[in-house]
Image (cartoon, one colour):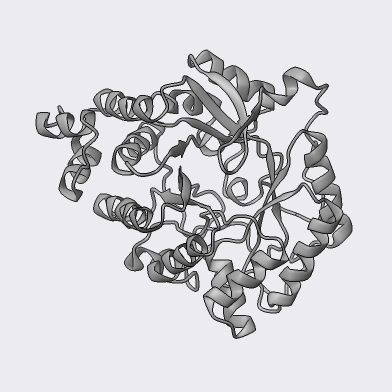
Length: 378
C-alpha cells in the first residue's frame, strides 16, 4: 500500500513520526517506498558516503544460564556436561587471535550463571586490562548486570560503578529482545522486565558509558509491540543520548524450544527501514548480515543502515539457533563497495580508525573453529 503523503512529508522533513504512523508503515508500507524513505534518513545523517564496520570477537565466557529463554539454543543448565566457564588461557587465546586480525574490541557476554558474583567479573576485567591494555571491553548485557547485582546484593548503580572501575568500557544491547513484558513472559523465563533492561541502560548512560540497543523480532510479538520497542528506545535516547547504534535481527528458530518459522528477508528489510525512520535520534543503524547473509546485509545499506556491524571472528549464540553466515573482512569491504559506499573500520564510539585492515596488512585466516570450550556452533 502506498505510504500516506503526510507521513512521507514528515519523514523527508526530518520530523518525528507517531506510534500510529509507525505501525501503519510497518504493516502496510510498500517495501521499496519504505526503503527509499529510510535511505533518505540515512543520507541526511550520513551524507559522506561511508559505511563503517568493526573488527571484534564475541566471547561467551560461560554458557551456563538460569534464564532458560525459549528462543535460545546456546544455554546449558547446571549440572550439565556441556556447561563451561572459560579460563584465562582460553580467553587469552581468543583475545590474541582478535588482536592479530586487527581488532581491538571484544564483545563479552555469557549466561546468568548462578555462582558468579561481582568479584568474578572484577577479577576478569582487571586481568584483561593489565594483560592487554589497549583492549576495549564491550561487555555484559543488561540482564547480566541485573543478575550480578542480585547475586552480589548490590544496587544496579553500585554494580555498574564497580564494573567500570574494573575495566568495563561499554555495554551491548543484548537481552532486549522485545521490550514488552507480555512477550518477555513468554520467551524469557527469568530474563528480566522491560523496566529492568531500560534501567540498566539509563544508569550506564548516567555514569558515562555508551551502549548499543538491539531488537530480536519475528517470534511472538505483534507489530504494535515491535513499534513500542522502538519507542521505548527513542524515549530513553531523548533523555540520555547514550546509545551509539541500533541493531535488529530476526529470530532464528532452529534448535530452540520456541521453534516456529523464520521471517523472510523482505520482512527483515521492512522492519529495518521502519526502525531507521522511527529512531530519529539514533546516530547509527547496523545491518544484520549474521542472520541475513552478505547480500541482504548489502541491500540493508539502502534500507537505512549505515554500518555493516562486526567482522564477528566468533559468534556462538545466534548460530546455535541456525544462523551460519560468515564473512571475511575482505568480503565485508567488497559488499560495502558494491553497494556504492566507502568501507571504513571504526571503534565502538564510531570513530574512524582507517581503511580495511586486510588492505594494508597480510591478514591471517579466521580460525576454522571457535577456539575454547564451546561445544555448540555459533
